[in-house]
Image (cartoon, rainbow, N blue to C red; front, side, top):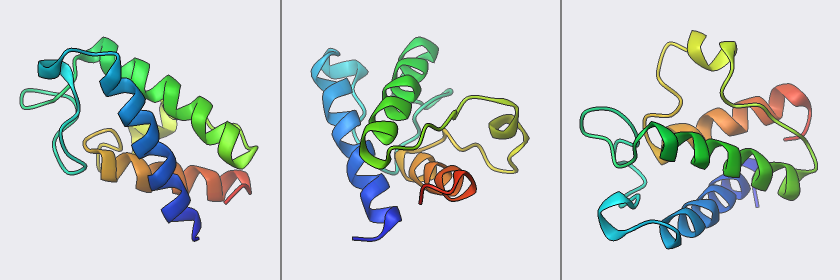
Length: 101
């Protein structure tokens, strides 16, 4: 399984756990749906909870710590937290930079 596939699988498991802890109207419904913002599926607290849970799950899966919400994330041309798919791509990139991918 490729790094990208492993990252997506890990994030989808994290999303599933996130959804179990939230009411139906606060759940992430789609991989391509907007996570945060006007049309977002989660609020700012939910997004931070998802990011922290993702960091922990990625470290557990790959043995490499990654920090996702930092200056580098804010400097990206595209918002890495826009969708689950963009989050997965960003995580894979950060893992590669950290030598864990």
